[in-house]
Image (cartoon, rainbow, N blue to C red; front, side, top):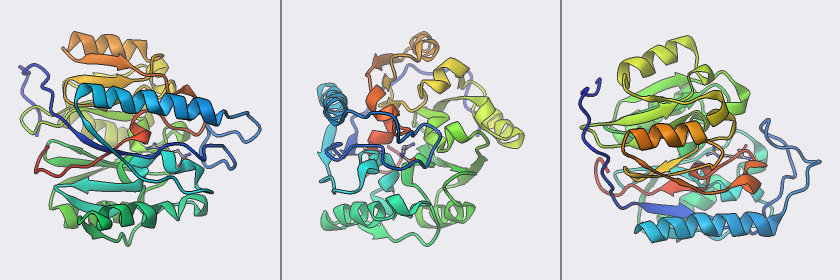
Amino acid sequence: MPVATTRQSPIFTPRRYLMCEPEHYTVSYEINPWMDVTRHTDRDLAVAQWRVLRETYLALGHTVETIDPIPGLPDMVYAANGATVVDGVVYSAKFTYAERRAEGPAYQKWFADRGFLTHTAAATNEGEGDLLAVGDLILAGTGFRTDRAAHAEAQELFGRPVISLDLVDPRFYHLDTALAVLSSDPAAPLVAYYPPAFSAGSRGVLERLFPDAIIATEADAVALGLNAVSDGLNVVVAPAAVDLAAALRERGFQPLPVDTSELLKGGGGAKCCTLEVRTAAAS
Ligand code: ARG
């Protein structure tokens, strides 16, 4: 449903996040164009940047829980890919590449151990990397990682309309690298996105659903600025995404630049490191 033209001011709602410290961080394989095994990675810097991100959330009043990192799973830091949680129901991840496959059951166990109802995915999907709840909808990416069959599976599981979006640029291989949910409020949902990352038809869908969306520039997109985390008011964003920060400020949001440059070597930013645990309906 198109949003109203007069928007209310951005509203903060406290969130519950799951994160995984990059204790075993390295780039030892290449499964996206950002990864280069010949480039030096600094685990300690990755940990330091990750801790600042975690502290930023805590200072804002959010809850941050952590899952133990597993040796041999360097991408486990990208917690957003570990599952999708809507209304307290957990849809497990089923990774495309063998290198990450063990992360799905590890994240699912974390939730099951805490009493969550979990559903083991039949279809390939990379969690919140490609499945983003906004308002009453779930926006779902496909083209590089998540299978269309997972979109149908998620719709059946969550009972929410799932909107399939085709990603066409390999640099933006997950939906959360091309689109940021700024407000999840069903009365005033808002996103920012980079149109060239989507097929023409998917751009049309986004224009209809979000006529007042923030349109990111190429400079924002290549800094993975759209891999941002919003609590409805504060938006944690890559410092290099200056156009996006200005657009956010103009709409009444509070951009909070947090440097996750070391984690960018693995192809992820702040959002990739942050899995939102949505326990209440329509949070
Ligand atoms: N190296 C990881 C991969 O290619 C990065 C994942 C980034 N996560 C995200 N939510 N976009 O799978």
